[in-house]
Image (cartoon, rainbow, N blue to C red; front, side, top):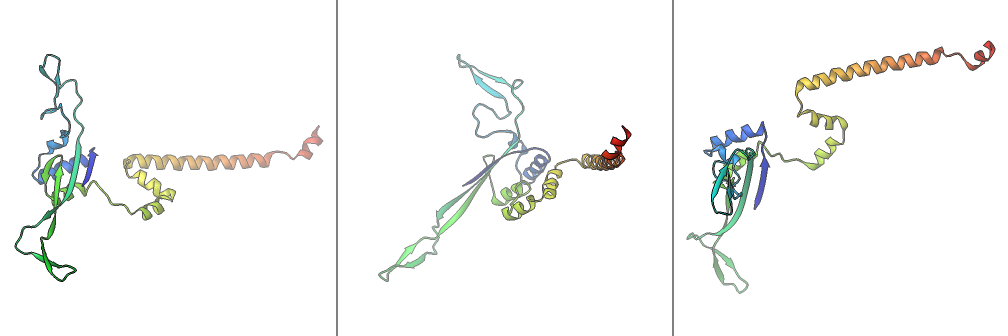
Length: 195
């Protein structure tokens, strides 16, 4: 069994909602937790007090966080087909055995679905990473910055680049002024003669 629970945020949330709709599933299943007891189908908290009365309160609870719960279970099933396979034993006699088949049981937020649908929804969210290539790439500072810069607005990146260039220009001017000041200082022999 493979199980994955993912909290969704934009832009992945919109992609998953569109994929669920195209697969014939209601995107509202993202906003309900199938494992929680005490939340009804419209997201209201259900509280039972000591007098056994049920009260609904939707104003006090925060809106549900969109969550995707993917689950795939592989089941081994004996086939009951008429095509029986024979397996030789040590004594030379053949024994009839039924072939075993694997059945893939897939669920999205506790709703049964096909493996194709599960793959279609998971593929834009999940990425397979080659650890050797990733560690080599991340050993370079420029690669680390590129990974971080992917999540930042392009206008902010431009402003940072402009500010960095401005800082480097001013630092170079400051360094040149300091070198010029060092050259202007009188040697120690000359200072003694003036006294």
